[in-house]
Amino acid sequence: MKQFICIILLIITSFYVDAQAITYAEKLGWKKSDKVVILHVDDVGMSYDSNEGAINAMTKGIASSCSVMMPCPWVAGFTKFLQEHPAVDAGLHLTLTSEWKNYRWGPLSGKQIVPGLVDVQGAMWPSVPEVVQHATPEEVEKEIHAQLERAINMGFTPTHLDSHMGTLFASPAFLSKYIQLGIDHHIPVMLPGGHATLINEQMKFGDAGIAQMRSIGEKLWLAGLPVLDDLHNMSYEWKLTAAEKSNDKKLREYKTKEYIKALRSLHPGITMVIMHCTATTEVFKHISDSGDTRRGDMLAMMDPALRDFIQKEGIIITTWRELKERRDKAGK
Image (cartoon, rainbow, N blue to C red):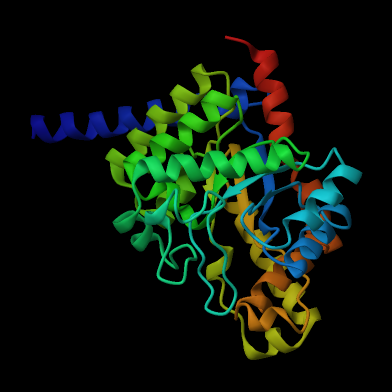
């Protein structure tokens, strides 16, 4: 009985300590109870439709950030938009896979330099496990450096780095290269290094995985970079009915309802909410069958009901640019 009581007390104490832990939002000057959110659009530059969807979500809606896939065909169109709108929060969606059957891209470094990153077609591998199986950490390092270099050469300095399909999180060696790229260039890196409550529920990191994320988060913080407390990456899994797919009003209402539920579920701290806003045209269905859910993301971001909910709940919408500015002010 005594041993049992000791175990219970240890669990309660651990929970209490964790509950009292300071969030990265607090370290950057927000209150302990604040929910601080980056509404983030992935896959910009992938296609014309992707560009238009991101632009609509950010200029006509409430989305606050995006990231660009530098190896993809429509990057030039979006960098032109960035030159005309320099305040837009745009990072790099570091890309090591080419997942669609009829629409593909290869590494910027070239097959000769990074042979392990390409399949028999000369495009990047379609899946994350194939990248892990064939590519070396050195090849990954060369390619992500090439993607950063292209962004800078095209006239924009990314506000942050993140990872397409999470490939850079699939191997400890890849993750190390990703983190080091951010530290070396003093660019914030997407990593849930705080309580990581929602992303752990989704990905099942376990205690060891969470401990590793928190350790890396501390490393990034000590390097002068801001760190996320959590990551929400579940919108792709929301299932649409046939009625919602065929009716944009119903699609918008469903997606808005799901985003409101997601925002209600957030814990205090800085959370990045990932989406794929796309203004789908006739062409997009020949790229991917995900057009409906992506269009729904865009419609939700433009829905006044979502904006009203965020304002009513006192949720704070931020950007990677603001996080970096606050981190610089926080100092050592």
